[in-house]
Image 1 (cartoon, rainbow, N blue to C red):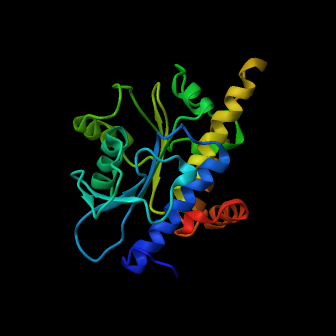
Image 2: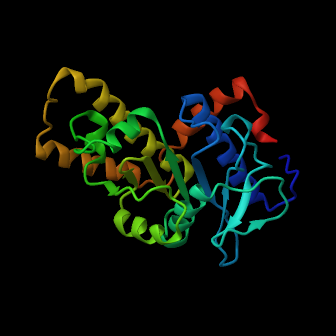
Length: 251
């Protein structure tokens, strides 16, 4: 396995996973010029909490395993890099990595339909197949402006609690989880729910999903979404699509 940084094997594996995820987001159109972030904790034997994040200034299509930044919770970059990080991405991601035990991966997007639902008074409507799987698992955090202030992180963590799918009011979507594959699946499910809600809005009121069916969907979703390897097949399939186009993320 090529490892030009000479870092631990488990860190290089994390770098590969995260770089691949940036390319998957690019393939799906979940990009916002050079903005937004996906971060992943760096595994290691010590108590330090370091995480990987994209270098500010690079498009997702330019992110590679070797150019990802490793930072600590205080914003110090570990190692040498020609790039820094975006403060608006560091603040919320560091808050989650530092305070939420299972937040090994954090993803944030500004997709059109995600922002539309985040800006709607009613938020996510539990009225379609994907939304029903998220019932009781969605948190909301009110808009406080550009996320560059560390004190907002405390309120964000409090509002999230243990809910892995997050709607940042007037802002966008966020997901976190114990693995990059599961976090990706959570965000994909939330994104699909938003896509369908916005697409159907012009058709009038949606068909309500009965409460007992919502609860059944939630229970069934929790069963599969707590499996440690759940979502890996989906993620790997997307990475294979990326590889057919460009394998430079592996460098």
